[in-house]
Length: 122
View 1: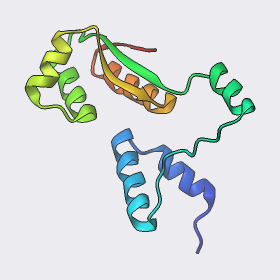
View 2 (view 1 turned 60 degrees about the vertical axis):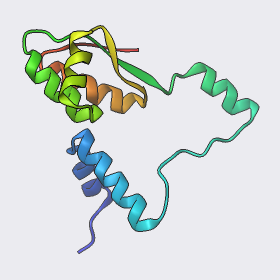
View 3 (view 1 turned 120 degrees about the horizontal axis):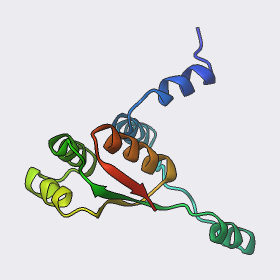
């Protein structure tokens, strides 16, 4: 029995950002490819790039009431140690991640807000 594209999309859609990241790395290793986008120079692409923002910064505005939960999320998504993650949360407003895609930025914002933080995507 073959798996349909819809089944695959549904399964991928239910993954967390970290699980999706691991999946992409597994694809890269198994097939010897890179998930990096290929840049094509030209007048049409330059105009499109100027119109639509492709890289976003996730700003932590404040930890809210659940500071410990926010620190845990920051550690998980950034790979920082406990002290560094605590310093980032204590020093809010600060950038948690910079230069991420819109989808990753929205997923990170959702995770941080669920932990109780105040977040902004720029």
